Amino acid sequence: MTLPPSTVAPALELRALTKRYDDGLLALDAVDLVVPAGEFFGLLGPNGAGKTTLISAVCNLIRVSSGQIRVFGHDHAEPAARRLVGLAEQDVNLDRFLDVEETLLYHGGYYGLSRARTHERAREMMDVFDLRAKAGTRAPKLSGGMRRRLLLARALMHEPRLVILDEPTAGVDFELRMELWRYIRRLHSTGTTILLTTHYLEEAEELCEEIALIRGGHVIARDSAAGLRARYAADSLADVYVKAMGAP
Amino acid sequence: MSALVERHRGLIWLTGREVLRVMKLWTQTIVAPVLASFLFIVVFGLSLGGRIRQIDGFDYEVFIVPGLIVMAMVQAAYSNNSSSVFQARFDRYLHDVLAAPMRPWEVNLGLSLGGAVRALIIAVALLVLSLLLVDVPVRHPGVLALAVALALVLFSALGVIVGIYAETFDHHTFVNNILILPLTFLGGVFYSVESLPSPWQEISHANPIFFLVSAVRYGFLGHSDVSVALSLAITAALAVGAVAWSSWLFSTGRRLKD
Image (cartoon, rainbow over all chains, first blue to last red; front, side, top):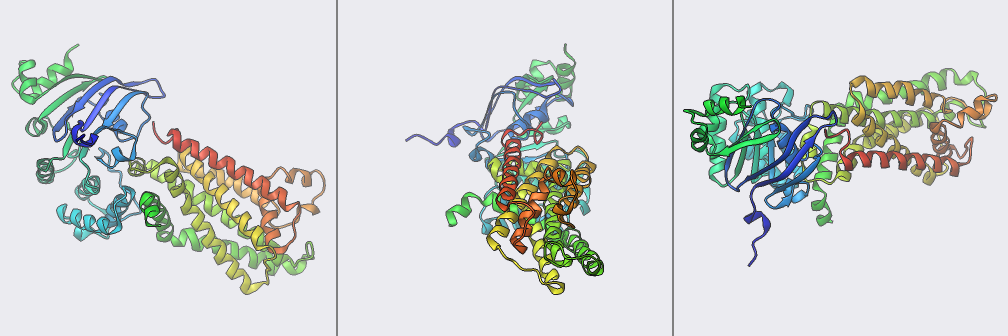
């Protein structure tokens, strides 16, 4: 029996992915990257390295110049691939006209969940992220922490198998960060693939099974945290980062 | 039916979101334009109407109602969609829609329908209010329905296009104030173009909204300054052009995606 592509294929597969913006900036230069299904994968690099461009390309938010992107074996532009990906962007991009519950409901609707399942899942997400008391509050009136929770709840609303988190804890206080990571760990333990970008290197070191270092639109190294430390003869991931990013 | 709903669930929710926005902002999106247009009927029609002789055999207050409905409708369809799309781009919550498993035409249609629904609500409300004051007939309902449908398609699509191209909030008001509003006023809403001297009468024929007003007026009153077939054909051609343009933007991602 042949298994369907989504059960045997990597969660994410990039082949010669290139993105040149209209102003000529080459943000991604023939990037090859494979993220196995079920992995907690980190993507580290300085601002402007190409992390957000890579994520945006996977999620169909930018026009790719050339190359291939496959999500669990499906071309990333196909509806089948889109349903499998959940994205929490770095910027808080919540619909200003919708309250918390509506934000979740409409997202579920956009992703094709049935009406009953959408309502059920929205209640679940509000309970998990402690948003129930704010169900009727519009996004602009939420605190920064609440917005961040809602962003994550929205990304998980349609039960994606690949969750992409672009600096999800930026500007978040310590307690909420710990809380978010507890939930993300739990999610990962159920088999969900996590692709994370973060500037908190200790966080990446602790959470990620594999880490790719990206600089100038190229993946310059990829290994486990221990493997990277050994390769760069460094004591910590922070040392690895400094050496890798500072190298000519 | 349920299979169809299931296949296009994203489109249905997106349309619902656009209509919800209209309803949440009902004082701005519905009440204000209905009131403004109704005041035109009261002030121009009832106050000044007694001093203006009949136009094309109709009392002035009756003559202006179809044009005022067109004016309110096209502005509502346009400004609703241009502001909604621009805000969604500016605040980047459009990403939630662009990343979703919807086809480009579904996103285009979903974003367009909010303006169309708003314009229809305004048109119906304005007609009902007008009927309280003046006796406006509907002589050719089929022509009226077709002209209204074409107007909704044209200006809903135009709103989406401008919402996609706009760099600032001023751009979408600029198009409304500098293009749509003057063309509507000069499109024979308040007068018969036939009464204009040359060359203004000929120049008016270069105004696409003149043809739309003529078609809608024919639907209501059974009278038009030009051939109704020509009016419908020109409006339809413009509507097709606008939809083709917006479809191209969504299918290629131009201006929507870097």
